[in-house]
Length: 252
Image (cartoon, rainbow, N blue to C red):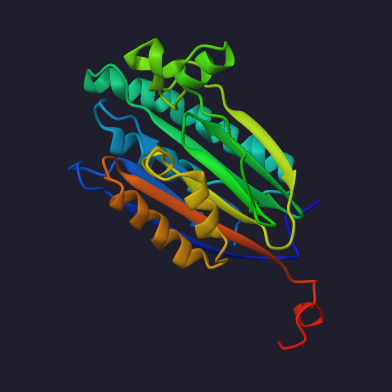
């Protein structure tokens, strides 16, 4: 098996420091030719968050060519495990409590895709007019909601993340797989987008089908809504090259 695909991918990546922060601790990667997209968000309030997120992205950038989706997933998980150990050691060397980063990874191979994540950065899928969040935040808020507790009324730390690369000696990464369809658009983003921008606005923006325009518009919305955090988006769309579009639209 190989990762040769009938899909043509177009992508756009954009990151902004925002209107409040002085340093951008987000990092991203968009490599449609490899079927690899990443967003990492250095843990705010901790030292060297920008170093942590860049270390995560650089490690994933070095992944070898996969022979199939399962080997792609295994390679990504192994790389993240290694980064987790390296960040734990680096934190001890620098005498800081934690050097950590969230991560979301989208892998495409053949007609399938996989999402890997730790933390509260997200992956959305826009398909046939509907928006679906493919990841589930690793946060105190989500854990409380799962227990039927109102996170907003619980305590001030409800929005703290419960998983991140470098946060603990053992890294837990969630994985979800799905089949790719013609016209699918994926959005990877840091919480600098998902917090200030509504899902309705995200859905309406992705509906344009233009990755570059969508990325620019989404970052603009985050900034217009306060821009209190670094904001990073990666938008990528799949087009089935085996489908004759002229049969769908005779005017082409």
